[in-house]
Length: 120
Image (tube, rainbow, N blue to C red; front, side, top):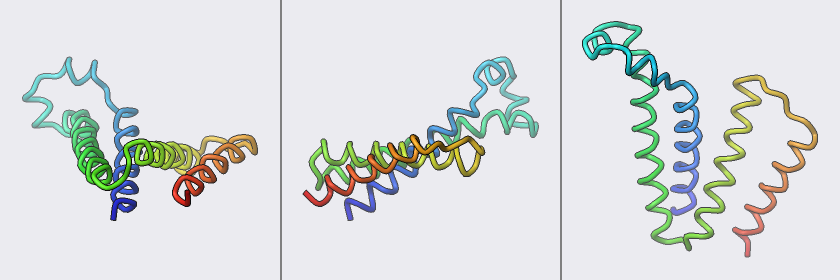
């Protein structure tokens, strides 16, 4: 069950990272609270902040559940590796960023490391 918790936490981490990408603090701070909660534009400014909080909490809850049964170093290494691969895949598949053979090679090394850690 701990491995499922790690996977959920890693997916939440990837979503959390992209919520940061879309936050516009300067616009949000310069907008009145009334406008934020009553207009479409205001709600769109608030959405990344809300997602940041939600995905951050999901990440913390599931990562802490995984750490109850896994050693911290193992849990952290696997969570971070899955998150890193997830961010790169999202960049390539969603945001159409390039993926070089060198990028692919190093991602495969990370995945090999994850498998090695899990098997040992």
